Length: 278
Image (cartoon, rainbow, N blue to C red; front, side, top):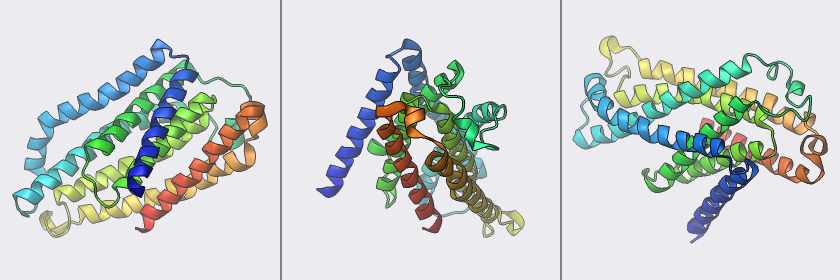
């Protein structure tokens, strides 16, 4: 009963976040179209990969662990590759935007001048991102196998949707873009590492005993520490807590929304720490 009530709460939060974002966007056709593109691109990528990846997996997978286990490995490999392609695209766009700014070098410049409306391209990219996150949440909620981390992953999806939609609602896409960038960079390394694992590219199976999966695992741990355990708290949480002035940035009544979103950053950080030590 408790788990069912918690799921219902998360479902309601995701729905409310989407409605709030759509309302703040004035239900603009451009924003809704870009959100639809985000959802459709995820579905299209899945369809395209279904046509290509079975042959790729058959050619590259190592190890003989039985047909049933191999099917499970392929299912996870398919998921990792789809996510990897999406994350690579996101990082390409985000890096292009952040490369022109000083937000990571001097986090105070994130908030100044204010107001500083996000460029149209950034707003459209935000809508695209939200569409992908909504698709991921629906897939996780209704279609993915429910392993021991399933509920935590769905919580992560819900938290991410609230942060993306919420930061857009209060006009703070700049800090939101930095949060997305750090997560997407580490997700690229994570998905490469897991893809190698599901291919069986470890020291026991890869030619000449090369520990490809093991080396990538170390790279993943280093990247996770750098992006999610160091840069996320020292750049993102630090500037939100100590450099953002809610009354100035969000304006009077909006301060409570800024503070609520700030709490969710700590929720994300708690998940980062849990997954690192799990």
